[in-house]
Length: 198
Image 1: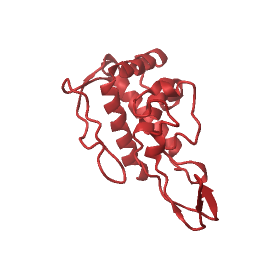
Image 2: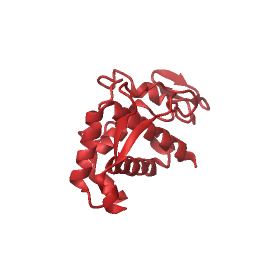
Image 3: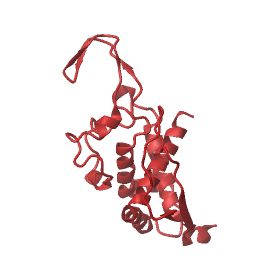
């Protein structure tokens, strides 16, 4: 149950960004058609063949981590964090949202640019939507596979476009899990693969 809302929120952010950048959506569609074809649906094993789709998911999680402040940690001994002395048993909160938008770590940090991940994974200390180390989210692999498969199938099976001419509003809502303030509304039309298969 813990990962369902965060995955749904991340997928809504991904689709919102893709609808604002139709050229990126088209790149994913081309990648899927080239690697998978139009005779069968994407399967879990196929997701690894879709690097640009992974780039889009990574960029979505960078800009819109569903949990912007990671779960708290307790220091087990006296330590130093960012130049600050932290006594033992201090609760530490990690602001992933701020790290993911830090201009010292990311070029043009507020722009949606999946290409920034095209040379493979980035430094593990820069992209931390699931936390890191021994206390990282145990569902990281499942979440990434689920998001890749779901987003890939949505793009493989449907043509997507915005309801109107104006861009999708990307205002963030409030809460522990940060969903969009205004839920996504989009138009879709079945692609030929849907009639072939079903």
